[in-house]
Structure formats: structure tokens, C-alpha cells
Image 1: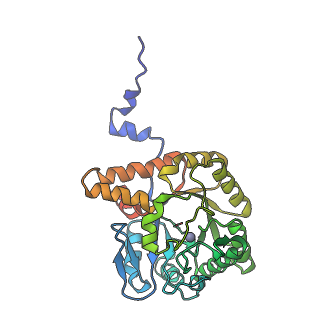
Image 2: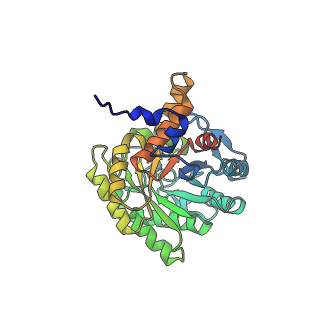
Image 3: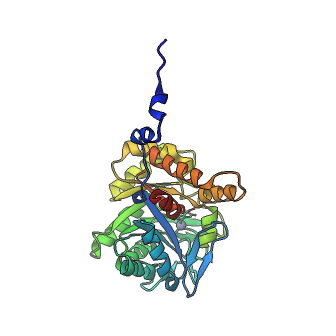
Length: 322
Ligand code: PBG
Ligand code: ZN
């Protein structure tokens, strides 16, 4: 009998390493950060152990940490000091996120600064667009996203990332950026963003939960694959430079399908709920946090993502260096 002996290539660490089909690098990781108006703020987010909200004056030390970890990219989220119907604080030239972008560009110009473009943290009702008679009005919401994206580009953002799931958001932002001389600012579309229950900890962190209703009229139904592929195709046609699948781990099948369809870089968002579940289980002593973290990140690469937005970025970078 001739046994097919696949174990031959598993017999030493070096053999396993040279035949490994997928690998993880610090270059793959994007670190999300929460920026809050005010001064002297460095507060831990209860639902996301190890993650903090920073005011701009407290950010310099963290920029150093990010640099020292070898990370190449961050994704900035803003909190609001004052919320209103039209998210007016989201596009201020001297807003918290806009100032944070400038600080990154001053202290670490080599780090790629990406920004989340969505108004839910800035609207009084907590929805990702303009709310009228219980409906999120698509085309008027695009104007808010345009203003916000332009303010980020003016402050020096390298990549703006619209996450509101409004139809036409990528085209609208491309148009306003080009019209104002920012044709080099890239767009990463949150193309296939699902109506997931895994965003809960983030909404605590960014204070962005909807006050009434939910996001099911704009975020994608969890059941759908073809629709996700259409979202990606449309964002690509509208001028996106990168596309995204979000969440990551519950949607590895979507990442794999997207990788067959598009030639653009695919980012996957390893979201707050996916982070919190691992943190909580590790705290209980039920899993080995580092091993589960690395296995999870590698699975996202294996599915076909080229970039991973993850709250684990600093921890993973440390292990990859060691
Ligand atoms: C804002 C936004 C959300 C996330 C990223 N951008 C929350 C939401 O859509 O409710 C979630 C990120 C995470 O859970 O880590 N639209
Ligand atoms: Zn939003």
C-alpha cells in the first residue's frame, strides 16, 4: 500500500515555515484609534480592554508606540463634543480628528493616515446620515460625507474611508476631492459592511449608537453574498482605490469571494466584537490570547485579504518582531 505522506513536510519547524502558503506581516496591519475633543484625555474603553480614547494633546506618546511597533498605517475615528442634526462638528478644520491627522503628519509623516468618514458619532440621532421622518435620506447625506472627507484631506489624510453605506458615497467623495485639488488622496470604501451585531463595543467607544431604530436600511443584510460582490463592484466603478469587507472573521467567505472578483487591495475589518470576545475569553483563562489572535489574523489573510484593520495590531506587531 502506498500511503500519501503529507506529514513529511510537517516534520520540522523550518520545513513547515518554507512550505507555509500564507504569512502575516506588520505591513498588513492597520491600527484603529479613537480621538476625543478636549485635553488630558487617555481613557480606557471598558468594552475594549487595552484600547483608549485620546485627546490630541495626549496622542504624541501613542504615535511613538505605533512607530516603534513598526506599524505603517492607522485608521482614525472621531468623537464629538457637540452633536446636532447635521453633524456640524464632523467637518471642522480644527476638529479633533483633523488635528490628530496633522499631528501624525508632523511627528510620523511616513505613517499612512486613514480616516473613517461617517457622521454617526456626530449626529444627535446617531445615524450615519440625515434623518427625516424616520428615514435616512441618501443623497443629502452624501453632502455631509463629502464635507467630512474634504476636511480630512485638507488636514493631510492619505486615505479617506467612507463607512456610512450610503449609495454613491465613493463617487461623491472622489468628485469633491478632485474638484479641490486632492486627486492624490485615496479612498478605501467600506464596501461590504454588514448589519452585524459585532459592532457593540465600538459604539460604546465612539458613542455612536443610534438613538432610535437601527442601521438595517443601509448596512447589508447578513444573509447576502451576491449583494456584497455588487457593492464591491460598484465601489470599484465609482473610483475606490481599496475595498473592504466588514466584519472579517464571520465573513471569511465574503473575503474569499471578493478576492476572486476584484484586483483592488481588499481590507478586512476585524471589528470590536471580534476583539472583545477574544479578550474576554482570555481574561477567563479559557483561551491562549496570543495564539488565538495570530490564528485569527492569519485566517483573514488566508481568506484573501491584503490588509487587516485590527485592535490587535500593536500586540501582533510585537509578536511578529520577536
Ligand atoms: C461607523 C463605524 C462603525 C464601525 C466602524 N465605523 C460602527 C457602526 O457602523 O455602527 C464598527 C467598527 C468596530 O466594531 O470595530 N459607521
Ligand atoms: Zn456610521
